[in-house]
Image (cartoon, rainbow, N blue to C red; front, top):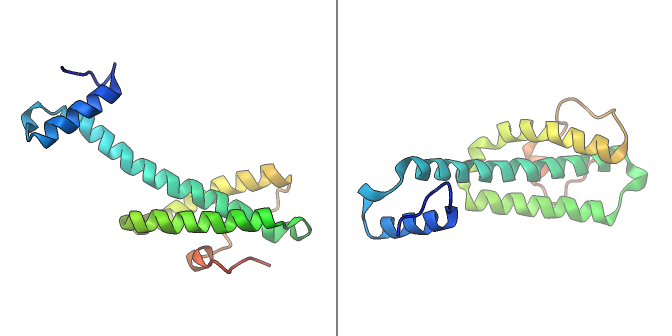
Length: 141
């Protein structure tokens, strides 16, 4: 049975896997398969940027609202660092995208931190370096 990419995505994926396993490469929906593989790579990078944004927002809140510091914020910081480390272990080539992803994520982090705190006095450039972001013990003062 032939499945359509547009009308039955799940069936299409199962069919493409069967064709690949059977070595029937001439029957593969090459263009859509290429799109999906590219999309998978973009989603891994998007996850890195999302996790960096949450981490950065919490570090900004930690620095700029010392009287509101909580165990919850600290645990979110630890969780995001662990998730980022795991993502980079599973996708080592994302290491080459860290600096660019950090720039993208910082813009999102500013919005998150401003929304959650009501403050608008955060630095326009990221005040934390990559080593600090990875350091499980680092909390800004």
